[in-house]
Length: 223
Image 1: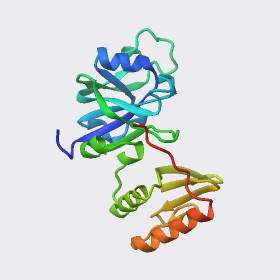
Image 2 (image 1 turned 90 degrees about the vertical axis):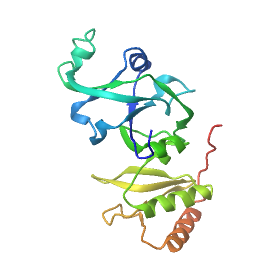
Image 3 (image 1 turned 120 degrees about the vertical axis):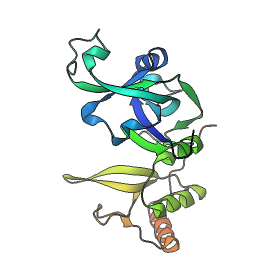
Image 4 (image 1 turned 30 degrees about the vertical axis):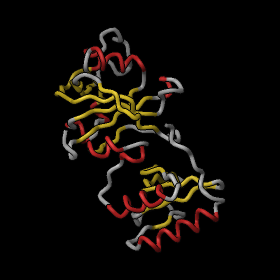
């Protein structure tokens, strides 16, 4: 295991999929939705609400990826020949033994996740989902860490709809009376604060916006 090893986090929609990963050592990814990180050294699994209140919306297990191949869904799950996607192509990611992530990586708030590509060092250190995101802009990472150190817990890389247009903003800070949106991209929603390269000035603007919206909604991480 090296700090730069790649980790692909994928959604595990049903407990039966966990049984397959544990006993048959594979995990499926639809080819038409496959991320570029299919060659990651490790695969981790984000549980949906079907796993119940104790495990849902969290990452509890991971495994080393030992290989992959392209197959039809019906070949993976022959007991479901009438499934609407039975003939579609899937990547079958071959896995080593499942390993438990301790502590688990949790989502403080419900959010839709498809895939997250991260690194081994981030995966090991992460306490919550937003700690996993890797961006090319180190300034965004610094602002995120400063906000967390101040007891503010932003959501990272969030889809925002404005009319018929959807944007991805770097951070969203939920507040008591709305949310503060932060972005380094000039093509962002009109209400977003555009982050520059002056950390102190940007943090002052962010704190002012948070106060104008009644203060942040804070959540405690489970122990």
